[in-house]
Amino acid sequence: MSFLLPFDPATLGEPEETVPLPERIVSGDPRHLTWNFETLPDGALFAGIWESSPGAWRVDYEEWEFCSLTAGVSILHEDGAAPVTLKAGDSFVIRPGFKGVWEVVETTRKLYVIRLI
Image (tube, rainbow, N blue to C red; front, side, top):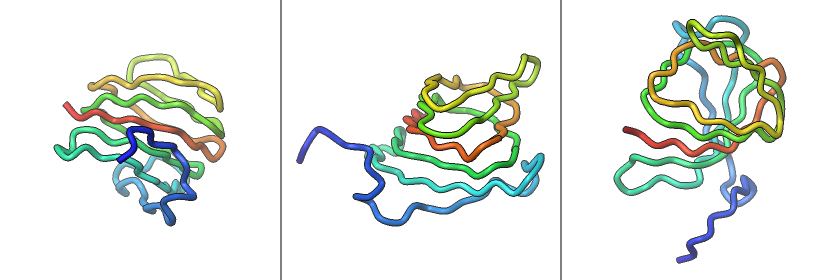
């Protein structure tokens, strides 16, 4: 077993296709593709690549998430705070308790690591 895990979707084949729950959609018709590269045996950590087409939906984070955008433009609208525009090259952490709207302006792709609490 190697302890190095390259994030290369070509090695995993087809991604999982999902959509936000209908009651969370704010605008558009966002479609998500996820290549999950790693899940710890206890199910508390996930890592991979995620992509979304344009649209906006409500989010409510109960987990930690590190993100690094590799393509596109998104705006995070945190309840009670000014919107933050994120683009390819930006990296950030979303802390548990974040509530608001994730808006994809241009198809966005990100590397992610999620740690459940």
